[in-house]
Structure formats: C-alpha cells, structure tokens
Amino acid sequence: MSHYAVVDPSTGETLREYPTITDEALVEAIGEADAAYQSWSRKVPLGTRIALIQKVADLHLERREELAASAVREMGKPLDQALGEVDFAAAIYQYYVDNGAEYLADEPIALADGTGSAIIRRSGLGVLLGIMPWNFPYYQVARFAGPNVIVGNTILLKHAPQCPESAEAIANIFAEAAASVGAPAGVYVNIFATNEQSAVVIADPRVHGVSVTGSERAGSAVAELAGKHLKKVVLELGGSDPFILLSTDDLDAAVTDAVNARLDNNGQSCNAAKRFIVIDDLYEEFASKFTAAFTAAQPADPFVEGTLLGPLSSAAATERLQAQLDRAVAEGATVLASGTATGNFFPPAVLADVTPQMAAYREEFFGPVSALYRVSNEDEAVALANDTTFGLGSYVYTTDHVQALRVADAIDAGMVWVNLVLGDAAELPFGGVKRSGTGREMGRFALEEFVNKKLIRVA
Image (tube, rainbow, N blue to C red):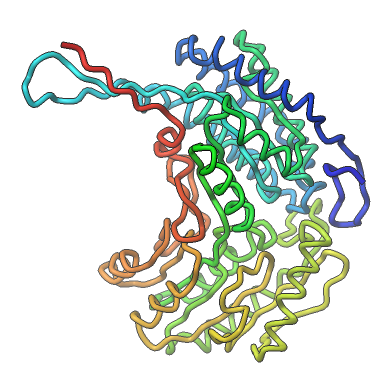
C-alpha cells in the first residue's frame, strides 16, 4: 500500500492511494516555493496577499460539504463536526483577512534622544514547512497557512499520510485562489513526502522555518533537525488536559460540558479534557452522572446526522488505545464503564483510582477514555493538574471568581478555560508549555512567529 492513502476507518477499506513525491519532484517543489517568495510574496502589496486568502476562505465555504465528506472518509470525524471544522477554517482565514493590515502596520519606536525616527516593519522570512496532523485536516492548515501567507511567507505543506484527499483539496483551493490574484502556484505547495524527505526539506537553506502539530516524538525529532540547521520551529504537541471541578450551581451543566470536552473529534483532540479532577463533596454525584452521560454516546456511523462519536481514526489508533486501557486495568485502575471495540468503533470508557505508579497516570489517551480523580481541596487539585509532562489546555469550574483566577494563575498550561469548553476562536491564541510545545498559533500571535521584525532607523 502507498504511504499516502484514504483508508475508511468505519470499514477498513482502502478507497484510494496517492503516490509519494519523488526526490526530484521534492527538489522542484522547494524551488517553486522559493521562487514564489522571491518573485511574488516579497514584492506584491499586502492587499494582494490578503485578497488571495479571502478567496481561500470563500472557497472553503463554497465547498464545505465535499471538504467535510473527505474528512469523514479519512479519519471518521462525525459529519456535523467535519462541517463545523471547515467553517472554522474559513473563519480563521477570514480573521487574517480582516485584521492582517492592522497587525502588520509599521510600529513606531520613540527614540530617547528625539532625533530622527525608528520603526519596526514586519515581513516574511521565506519558505516554511508545515507538518500537519490527521485529526483536524482543515483547521490545522488554516491556522498555519493563513497568517503566514499574509505575512509574506510561502508554504510547503506535508499533511498526514491518511489525509491525502483533504490535502489535495486544500492545494486545489490555494491554486485557484493564487490564480485569481495573479500569484504563482508556489505560494502554497502540497508535498506527499516521507519523514526522511521532510528531513531533506528542513535541511535545505531555502527553507526558513517549520511548524509541526503532532506527537511528542515527531515534535522532538523535528526540533532536533531544525536546531541543527538553525531554523525557527513552532510545535503544537500532545496534551493531557485537566478538567477541575471545585464548585458549581449547576452540576448537570458541568457534566454536559465535561462530556463534550472529552468527546469532541471522537476524543482525538490534543486539548480535549482527559483528566477530571473533582472536589470531594461533588465527586460521587459527578462520577455517576458523568459516566452515564459519557457512555450514552456509543460509536455510530459518522455520516449519520447527529452522531456524536464515530470510529477511531485507524486500526493503529484503536490498537494503541486498547493496549493503554488494558494496561491501566492490569495495573489496578478501577473501571467504572467500558465496552468492547468493534473494528475501530471504540466505546467510551471511564477509569478511577489511577495512581502515579500506573502508566495511565502519565499517558495521553487519544480517544474516548476518561480518568476521574478525587481531591480534597484547591491546592491538591492544582498539584494534580500540574503533575504531568504536558501543559496545553486546562478547564476550571468554580462559582468563585477570585478562586478561578487564582487557580488559572497556578496551572502550568498555555490555555485556561473557566466555566466553558470548546471555546476556541480565530482571535484566541492556541499553544502550550512543557512537552506540549512552543510558540502560538491563531490570533495576533500567529503573525509574530515566522516574521522578520526589521528595525528601520532614519537619521
């Protein structure tokens, strides 16, 4: 089987294979992206680059149904969520269309001696490599490519091997958008490359930065290569986000939010809530209601309207999650609920009594498995939340505003959501600390990652 293929996770059927790029074609792709940067991106006015991304946003909305269907076929995302992802990708592109000129305007610096003037002028660096994951094939590309094309960079995009259909669709959208404003196709070049070929791209002196969304292992490998070749790198890696419940005046609503935070994208989201840390006097009732609501969402056909939980993305993902669950049970975790997987349809499972001696205490469960923890006070909750190598997102539920901000300050994470879940928005920065990565995407901060902040002082 080809390295790149659409394998329907619902059936295991290989629907289509795509050839891996040849070494010769890869060299040509790098040259094409570099030529586009030299001849177009750094010479055309910002308004022209904005017009290109406006067309990209428009085409996402025009083709939302076919784009969403591709995502369902590739990784089993429920159709309603796939449509929502396409819409969100379009909103991200639109955000940079609406705000790019303001954010990239010259920034004056007041001079201490008062003579002359000085400004910071932001411009692109050149060719960037994006290594993207399978779980959000449109959203992840949008938050990398959108701001960087507007800044003036050009893009080489290596998508996940199981997402070639959506990768091709995005490339076609960018090609059409580029043609509409007279830009060369090299502004955005899709490459069906292997990991070894990606290393060649990173080493190439025409490539000036790399952004990776993926596993710790992938991030570490790419960061090592990027460091060796003195390339800027942005990493968005795994997470084991805590959901801390300290107080509530509506437990049912908190339970609903907790379930939604875990089930989004079939539980295969880096910033999904995965560890539920509940104050002692709410624990028993929360555990009972959460387990009932969580397991009510049994896996079903992702193309059926209203499906909340589809299949896991692949046979490998199913085997990995099952092995983690089996190991947790063997090491002594209490199973509050579980079922038997059928193919890649993996039923929700709830664990309790997970201790620091168990592998489950440290691992990220990438699928519909939740772990419940009981704590006696705020300090214990914060200590447990921080006792992880990850630091992506976190969720805090409390009726005490002062406590909410105090806990938010104390949590080691790139993002804290207070009394809400699934609150991501185009204007809000996304990223983590510790082994969850470095750098930020989305919002204004995405425009600052791969940019030359050039000082111009005039006497």
